[in-house]
Length: 169
Image (cartoon, rainbow, N blue to C red; front, side, top):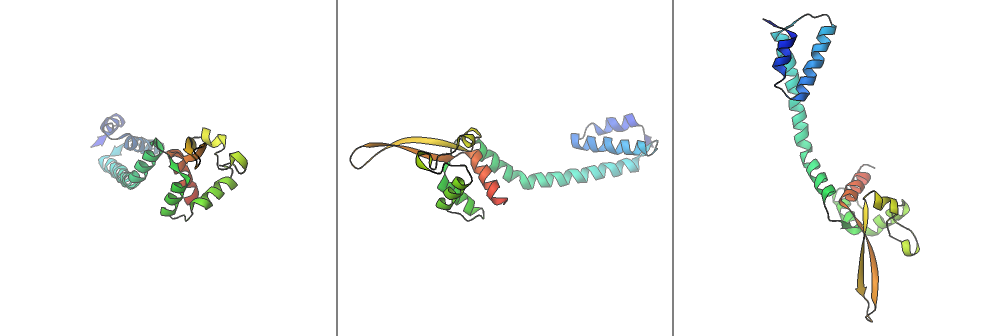
């Protein structure tokens, strides 16, 4: 028994959109090659090919699920980390670097200020990009004098940015 184009399209509408697109493209190829109708065997082959591709994509998505969850969690995190903590994360992921060398790298590459009061303070463009934030605080000195402190912190978005940057070098 041969199915008409309309019957085939009706049959395919129950599948996922990715499958429907593949079937529609294959149908177009068959029409362009002057095939007037599709046998059930041809249709079965198309469905099997599309289903195999769907299974491959599902396996790939499952393999990447953990990476996506971790990345989304870090990006969406409201907490930031110190640059020393970022250095430890980088080291745990295979890029050996300590806090001091990371500070040097960030200064040398323009992410942090280099001299004077701006030393180790993130440059404005990287704060606006959401890679850094500044934590202001006050501490008491030995003689009771209060000192204002400025601490650069790496946001969740910045953590993902720098891990990707270092690990893809």
